[in-house]
Structures are given as C-alpha cells and as structure tokens.
Amino acid sequence: MRGQALSEKQPPVDRKKIADGVRLMLEGMGENADRDGLRKTPERVANFYAELTEGMWSDPKSEVVPLPGDSHDEMVIVKDIAIASVCEHHLAPFVGNVHIAYIPKGGRIVGLSKLARVAEIYARRLQVQERLTKQIADTLFEELEPLGVMVVMEAEHTCMTLRGVKKPGAKTVTSAVLGGFRKDPRTRSEAMSLITG
Image (cartoon, rainbow, N blue to C red; front, side, top):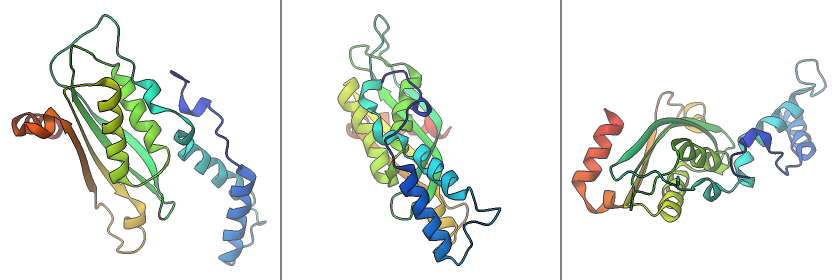
C-alpha cells in the first residue's frame, strides 16, 4: 500500500517456524534455550528477521509516482540514505548508505522521501549489495523514465567484519549507472563530486 510505513505491515512470515529454528540453533551450540537469558531469544530473533525482511511483501514500484504540477529539469540527488539489509549468504546484517541521483525528463519529479522508500523496500529483503544497488536504479529508471539514474551504495557487511577475514571497518562500494550518467562522463563526474563532496 502506498504511503504505509513498512513497520505497519504484517508480513506473512511464520514466526513460530523461525523461532523453532533459532531454538534448534541454540541447542546445536550446546546452549540451554530455556535458561533465563535465552528463554525469549527465539521469539526476539523471529521478530528481528521478520522486520529485516518486511520489504519482501511491498512493491517499491508503487512508490514512484510523479508529483503532479511540479517540475524540475536539473539533477536531483538524495544522499546518505541509511539502509540496513541482510546478506542472503550468511543471514548477517549489512548497514550503510545509499546515494541516489537522477535527471528528470520532461520535468517529471518524485517526492524525495519516495527515493528513500524505494531503497528501504529493496533493502528489507535477503540481499546481496550488488543486486540491491541495481534494483533501486532499475526501478527508478523504469518507473520515473528520467534521462539518467545513478545509485551508489557503501556498506559494511558483518559477514566480512565479524567472521572469515574479520576486517572491521571495511566497506563495499557498488554503483548502478543508467541513461545519461552512463553515456556522459562529465555528468557522471558531476554527480559523483556532489555525492562525495
């Protein structure tokens, strides 16, 4: 539903099944899932993952509705949009910022919060950062029909900072560049300088 906050929706997840799985995981670690500190952990984790994946039941395209009567023909950038997602390989969170730039065509613009909402809906799914970046760009390019779209994302992945190579602070940067931003290096450079400046 357009305009409804993600947290207001009740995703069709089986929280009991998730909680049962967490209980098994705790037992697999040699823990007593019934001890005081862990008794409610399975339900808490089920709620946590239901919230982190609630974008799976929302349509980001429904958010991209041009504003009637308003127009603009220069670059629009919303930067430092905080996102949190879940790596589908390890079910570990990754957090960061997404920067979205577009050049309106025919003056068609969208509310700034809608850009953040599209990013949020896609982020609240089991994801990989590369796909997440591309999904945001593709949706805005298809639905808004701008002259160009550029999405740049930087995120820290706990699956890399807390396990494996264990490199806290390492960030992954991805981009998706479409239309005029892809064709014209000067336009792309201008957007990057505004994003990083």
